[in-house]
Amino acid sequence: MIGGMLVQVVLLIVGFILLMKGADVFVEGASKVALKFHIPQIVIGLTIVAFGTSAPEAAISITSAIKGSSDLAVGNVIGSNIMNVLLILGITGCITSLRVKKNTYKYEIPFVIVITGLLIVLGMNGNSIDFADGLILWACFLLFLFYLYRLTKKGEETSLDEVEELTEKDTALRLILMLILGMAAIVIGSQVTIDAATNIAKALGISQRIIGLTIVAFGTSLPELITSVTAGLKGKDDLSVGNIVGSNIFNILFVLGTTALVSPTPITFKSSFIIDGLVAIAAMVLFFVFINKNYRLRKIGAIVMLVGYMAYFISIL
Image 1 (cartoon, rainbow, N blue to C red):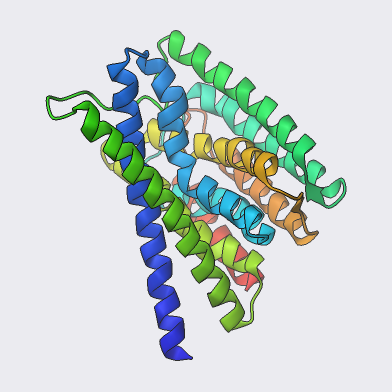
Image 2: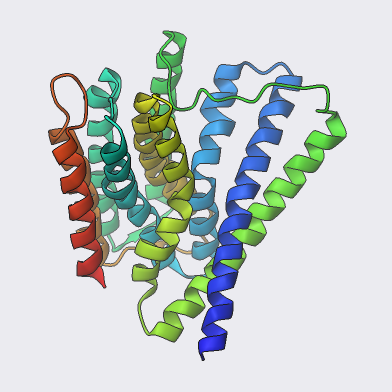
C-alpha cells in the first residue's frame, strides 16, 4: 500500500515536470517559428505566449474531461484561481511591495470577478458546463484578447510581452523538433498526472474535487508562482500581478471554455463547486479591497490573504 502510494506520488511529480518543461519548450518553439514567418510579436504574445501560461491547466482539464474525471477538470481551474490570488499573491506580497497597474485595477480584476460569477451561473444551469456554455466562455475570451490587443497597441506593457528572440541555432528542423517534443511532453505529462492524481484520491478515500482543488491545482500553478516571485524580486511587480490576473482569466475562459467544446459529454458542475467559485470571487474581492490609493497591495492584505487560504485549505480537507 505505502509502496504503491509512493510510486503514484513520484508519477505525479514526474507528470508535473513533463507538463512544465513541455509548456516551456513548446512556447519557445512556437514563438520562434512564428518569428521566422514574420508574424508580429504582439500576435505571438497574445496567442502562443498566453497559451503557455495556462497550458498545464488546459492539458489537465481537457484530459480529465475526456477521461470522464470532470471533478478534476473544474476543481483544477477553480483551485488554481484561488491559489493564484490568496497563496501566490499573498506570498509575493509578503516578500515585496506589489504594485498593480491602473488598467488591472479598473478593468481586469473586476472582469475576473464577473466571469467567475458567470461560470457559477452557467454551472448551476443544468449542473453542468456544456458545448453552448463553452461558446459563451470563448466569446468572452475573444473579447479579452481584443482588450489586450488594444492595450499593447497603445504601448502598454502586459504580462504577455515576453517573446523569444531568434538565434543562429534556431534552424527549422530544431524548431519543429521543439514543437513536437514540447507537445508530446504536455500530452504525456497530463495523462500521467491525471492517472496518478486519480489513484491517490482512490487510495486515500477522498474525492477528485479535493485532489483537483489542492494537489493538482498547486502543481499547475507552479509556473505562476515562479514567474510572480521572480518578477516581484526583479522589481517588475506590476507584471507579477498581471501574470496572476491574466492567468485566472485564461483559466476560466480559455481552459474551461475549450474543455467544454472538446468534451464528449457536458462537464459535471457539482453544487460544491458553487462554494469554491464564491471563494474564488471572495479572494479577488479581498485582493481588490487591500490595494491602496497608490495602487499597491498593503502588507497586511498579503498576510490576510495567506491566512484566508490556510482557512480555506483546512475547510475542504
